[in-house]
Length: 200
Image 1 (spheres, rainbow, N blue to C red):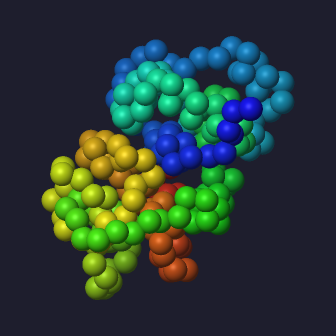
Image 2: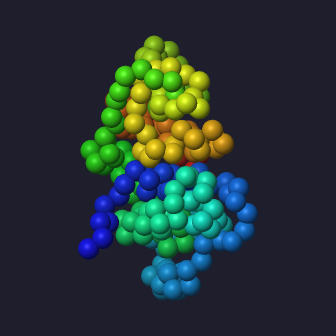
């Protein structure tokens, strides 16, 4: 039986759909049977989707540095979890609840020594604007493409430091998710605020 438990790349895929902004052109994801079933049952949130994605699995995989097999398996896990509707819109409140209460336990933050990398958590520009006055050193996703030295933090997936350079909104979302994995009550409140602000 195939493992249906959520993995780090699944959170990244849903975060990408959450922020929207397709750069990959036409060839939308289509699944007639799923959409037909969706019409019969109604939308997962009880209302029409906030964001209907117009991007192919191939384009999404390429953008996030996933193989087509990884992308296909990720899509299946996301839908099996009930967090992703068949039209590829993310169910907002369940997704946020999983990020806030579940993620720190099933995908905990793993800290390492100082490294050159890409800022995350309170080091990301948008989040830093909400947390002014914090003297804590900036955590980073270790990467040769980074420009900041700080304590390293494991990304949800190995390709994160590479693709966030081209997508500031996704960078902010994933940094906010790291803040949920690391932070206290104030930091978690800021993280959820940022995630709600940047929803597509």
